[in-house]
Amino acid sequence: MPLSEHEQRLLDQIERALYAEDPKFASTVRGAKLRKPSRRRRIQGIALFAVGVALLVTGVMLPKLAGIPVVSVVGFLLMFFGVLLTVTTLRRGDQGAEEPSEEGSGPSRSSFSQKMEERFRRRFEDE
Image 1 (cartoon, helix red, strand yellow):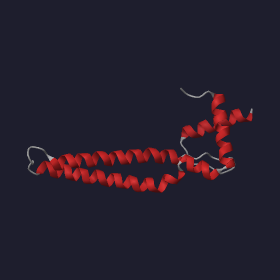
Image 2 (cartoon, rainbow, N blue to C red):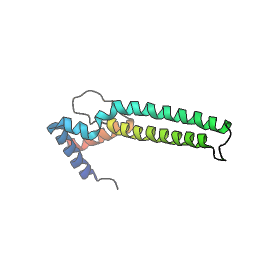
Image 3 (cartoon, rainbow, N blue to C red):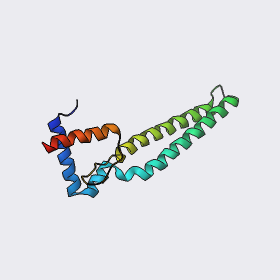
Image 4 (cartoon, one colour):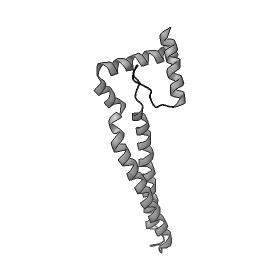
């Protein structure tokens, strides 16, 4: 259920007050320090996926041990965990990339919808 306009404004005020009072804590809570490790983990996830694909293909070509394609199963599991690692890192990276724009801090890089939302908020703050 989305927040009402009044609740959204109150939440924005609380967020601005938190950033003004303790910016270091606010950035820690926001997840801004996860950017560098997330890039490394994303690369690790992609590499794990690639190794998994190689093992899966190799396991298909090798004879099966006792009727169970062990190498293929291990390859599939590595692929699965590689994708899981990459996807969870991307979600965390997206959350950490958002930082509230301060007034007077030049143009920020944001999507069209974020710009429209910011304009909408300014209209109600001016009134």
